[in-house]
Image 1 (cartoon, helix red, strand yellow):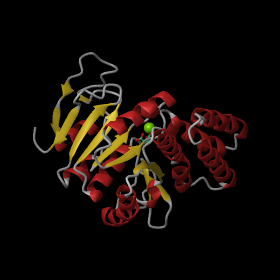
Image 2: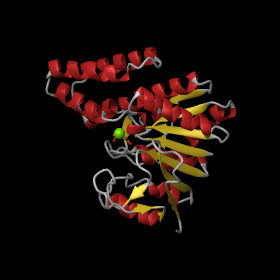
Image 3: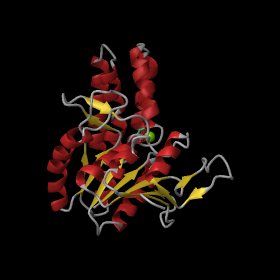
Amino acid sequence: MIIMKFGGTSVGSKERIFNVANIILKFNSNQIIVVVSAMAGVTDKLISLFEKYKVRDYLSAHSELVNLYAIHKLGLDDKSIHSLFEELNIYLTLCTEFKPADYDHVISFGEKLSSHLLSAAINSLGIKSNPIDSSSIIITDNNFGNGKALLDQTETKAKSVISPLLSQNVIPIITGFFGANLDGEIVTLGRGGSDYSATILANVLDASEVILWKEVDGIFSDDPKKTNNAIFYPSLTYDEALELSKNGAKILHPEAMIPVQAKNIIVRVKNTFNPDHPGTKIWKSK
Ligand code: ASP
Ligand code: MG
């Protein structure tokens, strides 16, 4: 079983979404579980939408909402997209306290939307897939904005939702970035948290491998988009990857290595724009 996570830029447009759908198709001989981030920039826009409602700037909030809707109206499962926007609009309209729980609830919509878009794209290519809301499978503590997974509870939930899908050859397209606490409230896992979602699922489902699909060839010493001197790492240990995620390279979520290191699950960081490049392999030894 392989867990594949796709980052925001990789699903940043209709064309990119179909590119991802085709990458998934190529791996389809394996059991695949997909974790998806919000489309590029969407989480930031949801944060700004929340802030505008909070200060009752309804005029700007409305135009932000219209803009977000336009980004997602791609002729892919428009009906679900429309109902998600209705749900978001109602939630914000009825929100009074704007608590951390409300914030997490609102910013989870980016992944809810992208999971429907990607699933629709895959289905249109003739492969069965279902969008899955991770609040039904990843159980977290109560740390809104920076939740940690409770692995035992998550294992039970994840298996009960995912196993029936896999046995019917349906690819689960799971929202990254959030789970829910024991009271069922949505808790986000920190910015860039979809990496962590993928490795949590790899741990509880005993996956053989995780592929973190990004928009660069793998892990570099520096941001390769900003400097020409960045050194490429073909392989890293979990500890080295963890160090790099702390050192501002910002390529991995700081919690993401913990669930895979615990079970020695191989992680690959690969590029959706250059899928034949081997990427960076993260493993216990070099
Ligand atoms: N969409 C979330 C963020 O922008 C999570 C992620 O991209 O991994 O932080
Ligand atoms: Mg993102």
